[in-house]
Image (cartoon, rainbow, N blue to C red; front, top):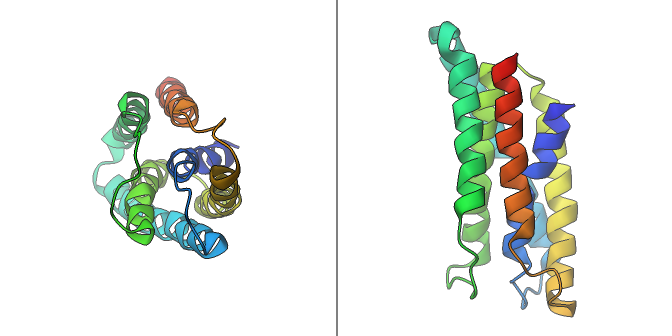
Length: 165
């Protein structure tokens, strides 16, 4: 279950970012590209996590919880961008997807369900980022930093729960 929740949470930072992208013509293509990145980075992260777990077996749980904690903390402490960066959106999608690598690295170290997380991250990212791109053109109500803060807080809670196991 935590793999599904983490997959959904990983899409929140992209949603927060895409809520300020008001002039995107190929919304579905950008959402698909971002979803694919949210699946590729975790595959790489899982492989590294499994490899690291073999060498750092005694430290795997502690390291993975620390990684989850700091990804969550980064989301909580990140600033709200008032203007959209001048970098092209496909490149921004790559940067927004890198956090899935560290989360999947943690999951790989814990030997959690790889494909459940990857499918959850990809599907939720596609659906939520497309919805955010559509909403960005229609309203300004949801253009705030709350989704990113919620995702960060939930990742920190997950890391604390993993420490107790």
